Image (cartoon, rainbow, N blue to C red; front, side, top):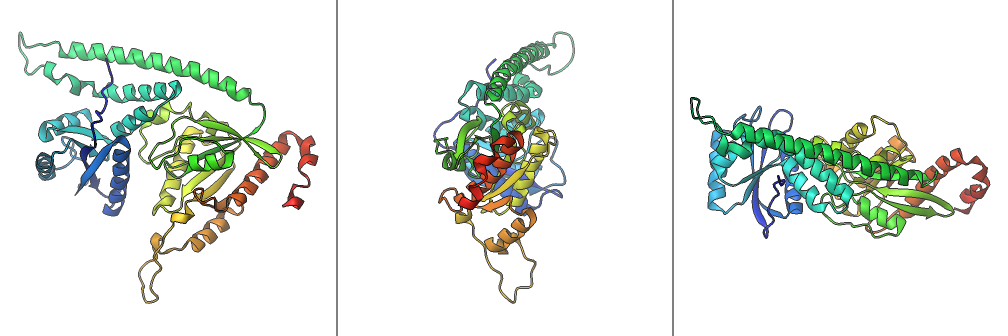
Length: 405
């Protein structure tokens, strides 16, 4: 059975839906919907409008309330909308009911991210991981695919083949999941051998939220041509390059970006891709300093790393990128309101974070190559410490480095 895919006609029109509740206020929901719109744009859709509703918890039948559902359905019918995308995961029952009411394609955040990953996957490894995540996502939602075979009522002669067909499909999918997991284990063994063949070179991994400039920084440091684009999840496959700063070589890897509400299936499937992160000696956490909620993005990445690396505590360098795009609004002298993130200058942020992290913090612009020499010196210092802990007899090769700077 073929995994259903999102059709990609020219610029499908979409509307987005989010809920405001005690855990996320309206401002945060707006930010989440902006990110969802960026995801939709990456997938090839055009966001026409967003809808929000305040509910203590999602409606178990249709996610939103009856009045809001009627408002969405009317707008969809009047404006030639192709799909409605919800910012949270939907159950199979909710998707079925929403499709009946709105009569267009219904997607949730997870299905949208899965579609983007499927479109971005290039290597056999990435394609296998995405296919596995798709089947794991599809498995509990089989019931909505066979509604035409459901038993509408009991009694003699009313027992259709629906449940039998669902069980058959479930076995097929479980078999495919088992096969894909076996393929990933085989690929993982090959990659493990490749990593062992790299010797004991110091390994540095670039990590961070999606679209913060990791690939651009990778190209700048390694003088390579890793694909970089102002889209979410431009990089799925881990890319490793050898970098030499002065006379010290080390391996630099670029990994898939993280995102809030990253589907569990993807985290599980892509754990093998993140082996470079688990085995890295140093992590370079790249942050988009121009994003209004970059601190929350830092927390998302750190939490995901704890899940992926099993809580491993690795030396980390925090690199604040995109200082060229940073903007702020200074407060007036007579403004007594609380200081917010948009009122804080770059110099104040620099002083705060560098006081907290000391030398393991640097502010750069990868696009304009601003402060890249400072980052290179920091990478050299940290990589040298790791290298000399393994090969202390090489110390004489580097003992005059500091005097030359």
